[in-house]
Each structure stands twice: as structure tokens, then as C-alpha cells.
Amino acid sequence: MTETEVRKTRARSPEDREAERERLCRVAARLFVAEGEAGFSMRALAAQAGCSPMAPYRYFETKDDLLAAIRARGFRRLAEALESVAAGDRRRARDIGEAYVRFADENPAEYRLMFDLSQPDDARYPDLVEASQQARLGMSRYVHEMVEAGVLAGDPELLGYVFWAAIHGLIVLRLAGRLPRDHDFETLRRTTLGALMRGLRAPD
Amino acid sequence: MTETEVRKTRARSPEDREAERERLCRVAARLFVAEGEAGFSMRALAAQAGCSPMAPYRYFETKDDLLAAIRARGFRRLAEALESVAAGDRRRARDIGEAYVRFADENPAEYRLMFDLSQPDDARYPDLVEASQQARLGMSRYVHEMVEAGVLAGDPELLGYVFWAAIHGLIVLRLAGRLPRDHDFETLRRTTLGALMRGLRAPD
DNA sequence: CATGCTAAGCGTACACTGTAAACATCGATT
DNA sequence: AATCGATGTTTACAGTGTACGCTTAGCATG
Image 1 (cartoon, protein in one colour):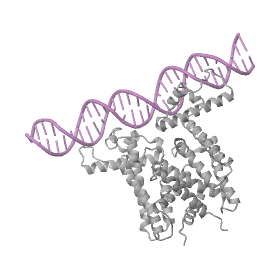
Image 2: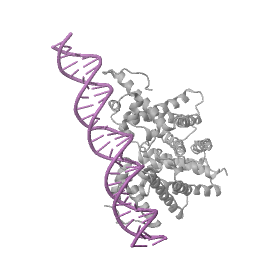
Image 3: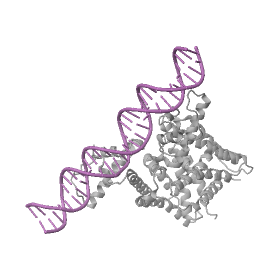
Image 4: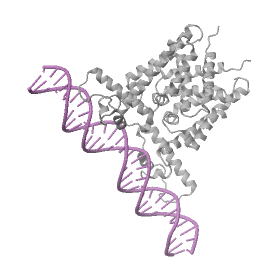
């Protein structure tokens, strides 16, 4: 099946163009998740999107560009997921950590791609840089708050990276199947974040 | 140039066969480092190794198998690097962290491949599982010692994973270009490990 | 020594990839 | 109505992993 029908005519408005770009991106992301990186090809995308093999190239110069768009989309969704925690009343570090892990949990293929080391450098894609910054800020805002509240001591930005790296490290080790058992993950996460909180606590 | 000359004859002993396997693996690793994942192909390897394109398939069933062999080799080298710290007199956690980071620093391409999330699961390759376990144990031995010495409190295995994930998280974020500036990396590492040590310290 | 057997390496071939280039086709603009 | 530029198609090419069958060399056996 080929998504919601789209007219075959030409000469779109900028909005239409953007919409088609996003549609392709969405279809591509779904296909990527379903088939894995190896099974994902431009031709397969075209088939799934109901167009000829070269059509997507009108919207993405290159396969790498398309993948970068998918990653940017992933970071935007991650930022949203963290945002939605912010909207809640309980604003504890634990919640944000949980939300982050939950995103990786529910979107493993996307998370993999977002942090895939063999993908080209972000710097080539301003959208991606923007989205990834946004997601990171979604995390580090809490660190800022805790520093300002005198709970943690140190450079907030630095501490933001520390927390991010620790939780990300756990996630990628799990994704790579390098952690012993999945049901221990909760413990690992709690231990790590707890230790960091204690170890970085402001001396009162 | 085609590595050290090897006779073109057939019917090798098991030792010769193993030697040739290792030679191919070494050449492949070097090529991989030089050309990057994208530029690395079985044909290029064959050219570099001075044999016909299909010859390496006598030693590795598949390209993935070959890459797995390279990764196993990487983990063995990592384990050695950690071992060499053990030989030194000062056995502090800091040394092992430094050695780990230094390995990633000096072998970025190899480290990338070793932890590349789009690589097939380790479980298919017993050698790789063995080597990676060995490297991990090289790290967690120190944690064990510290727990036994009453410096840290908790399940040693669990704590081993906590430290590993934290340092690995920092490294992959840097490899992905997601850390602000490289000269801050020292600070990040010190802050992270220091905080974990403090936060996991045994209450005396 | 002659003979077959087996493993090593070679060459060819196939299905598939990303994508360059030429062409067709339609909507909007002049 | 004529033109033009953007969109989509078709075709084509170079490069990939690898299946398959052939050749050859050294061994164990008659």
C-alpha cells in the first residue's frame, strides 16, 4: 500500500514540496525500522512511496541526506518526548532519565540510526544540528535547574554532558547486546544516575 | 605493495591456514582504517592482499564474518592495552580509565567498528564474544579490587558496567562529534569518573 | 611411480546498489 | 497562448557482495 493518495501532477507550492519531503521521510523511517539498515534502499523506498526509483532524489540529493533527515526527525521526536515530561508536574531528574530511556526503548532502530557512528558528520546538516541541540537542551535544562536550586554543584553545561553520556552509554551497550540481562537495566540506570547525583551534589 | 610475500601454492597446514587468516585480517583492518567503512570492499581487500577477489572467501564466509574478525582483533588489542596498565605499579582507577580512552583515541576507526550498532549481533561469533568479555574483565578487575578494598560499595559486576557505560558514552559522543570541544574531554572524563567514585564510595 | 583426492585460488556471472543524465509532462507565469 | 521551470520517468553505468564452476598443486594411496 502506498500511503495516502497524492496527486501525480507537478509544480507544487513550497508547502506542498515540504509536505512531500516529510511524507517521504516518514515512509522512509517506517521502512528503515521495518527492514533494518541493510534492507533499506532508495528503490525500496520509492516502491513503498509509490513513485519511480529516482523520484525521491528530487527531494533529497543523496541517500545520506535522506538518512540525515530521518535522524533529524528522530531528534525532534526525542525533544518532544522530553518536553512532555517537562509539562508534567514532577520535575525530578529521574523522570527525565526515564523518558529518555523510554524513547530509546520504544524506538530502538531510530535511536541506533540517530547515533550511528558510521553516518556522516552532523555538521553537513544544519537541520540535524539544530534538532540534536534541541534534544540535548531538553535534557540539560533539568541540570541547570538543579544547579540553580543548589542541589548540584558545577558547570551546568558540563554536567549536562556528563549525565547525557552516562545514560547514552548504557543504552548503546544494551543495543549492542553487551549488557548481561535486560531486566537489570533498571538497576543499572538507577545506580548510575544515583551515583552521579550523589557524586555531584553540592556540599552543603 | 602486497605484504610479505607468500607462496602461491596450495594445501596448507592448519597453522598456515590460520596465519593466512590473520594476515588477511590485518590487511583488512589497515585498509578499513585507511579508507573508512564506505571505501572498504572485499575487492579492495583482495587487491591490497595480492590475491583474486574471491580468495578471501576461502577464509571468511562473508564480509560480515571478516568484519567480526576485525572487531575481535580490536577487543583483543584493547584487552592488551588494559593489561599493560595492570603490569604497572600504580593500580588506580584513573589509570585504567586513561588507558581505555587512550586506546579509543589512538584507534578511532577500530573503536567505531567495534561498537558499530549496525554490525550484526556478537552472538553469532564466539571469538568475538570471548574477546569482548576479556576486554571487559580487564576493566572490571579494578572495580572488584576497589570493592574488596572497601573503597567502593555494591555488586562489583554491576559497578563494572556502570563505569564502562559512562566512559564509553563519553567516547562515542565525541566520536559522533556531539561534544562541544575536544580539549574539554579530559575534564569530562575526570568529572564523570570522579563523581561515580564519590557517589559509589562505601560509607565508612 | 602413477593415480586419484582435496583444498586453494581464479574467473565469470548475477542480482542489487546509489545515482548521473536525458527525456517527458504538466502548472504557473508572461 | 507560449514559455519555462519544476517534477517525475526511463535508461544506463560503475561498483558491490557473493554463488558457482574451473584449474591447479601437493598429498596419500595403489
